[in-house]
Length: 383
Image 1: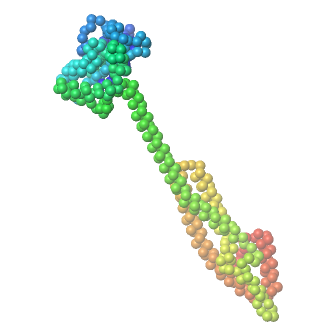
Image 2: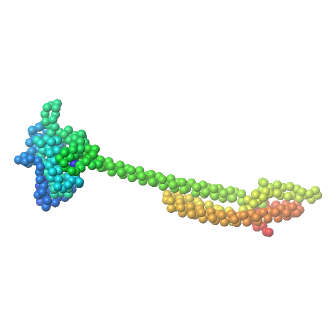
Image 3: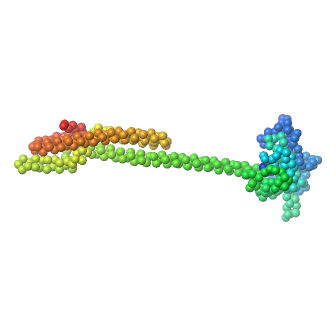
């Protein structure tokens, strides 16, 4: 793979020192980027460009003076391709690979513009720094000028690897410079960085979307689990309220009761109460108290559920509801037994009322009312 960079006059000194393997004040080789240099191999490096009998900096200055070049600090006066030996390149063809790559670059950008072409063999991967002054022809003014943007244009980048591959194929160099990163055209370093950042942003966005989606599904699952639980809770609460409403044990005649008189001489009053109403009005106080406690437990469970969004709480709450259901099932069995007792007691009371004189029946009714006024809900009926 190859990539290109552009440099202003202010950046040239550092780059030249790196190409030539100059040493800094500390005695260490001047490095480019974060690459490590094996100084024991630095003597293997070489330059494929012709000897100009001058330094690289002097040549750039000379070439810029020969053509039109704006005297501004932001003008890119040099470009540099870094051509790296492909991984599938046979080591025996490495030298030929760089020579042919140099020929390709020299022909593409002009031999009069070549600054240097240092091959570095003392770094992790063998590569060549091909530097040149970007000179183009201005047809309108009929002059040569320095313009890096026009010389290393988008079309130049797009066709670079394809053209280099074709040149190497003709030279019988067996390697592949075309890969997924270069197949659609080479990119500058800045473009590669932007692409990398864009890809990372896209990846992060996808992960974020996935997390949000999973969180939404989890919340929806919790809501779905809550629906039947809430419905059951409301049903049980309504049942308790209804029990509270109809289980007011009273000695008064209920509105559903019918009072009739029988007899011609000694008329007697008879009270007839529907069995269902009688049974409902005599639901035990113990059952009512228990149902209220069950409702309180459910209220507590609902509050606990509202304070959390975890499925573990839902599972725990479901288990509690199941326990209450088992207890209610046991209570229902007890209610059936109580209903049988109430039914038998009701028949006994009716038989007694039918035989009592009027004054005695009235006294019974008065006693019933007095008990109701005192809110005595624990009526004991002797068998």
